[in-house]
Length: 81
Image (cartoon, rainbow, N blue to C red):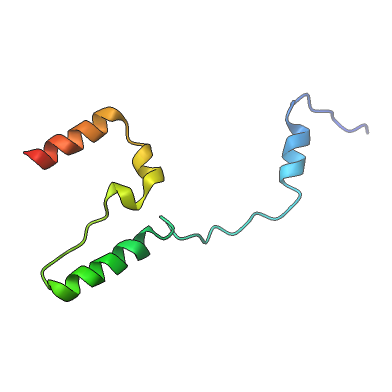
C-alpha cells in the first residue's frame, strides 16, 4: 500500500523540530529580578525593619517595555492620587 503524501507545507519544519527531545522547562520566572529585589530589600530592612521593598519597572526592563503608554499613564495617575 503506498504511503500517503500530506500536502501540509510545514511537514519538513515539523520533522526538524521534533527530531530532538523537548527541552526541560525548569527556568526561574523573572530571571534575577527576585534576587535583585531581595538583596535591595534586605539592605533596606537592615536599616529600617518596617521597610518592604516592592519590585519596580527598572528591576525588569523587558517586562516594563511591554506596558503601553496608556498603562504607564494609569499607573502614574494611581501613584500620584
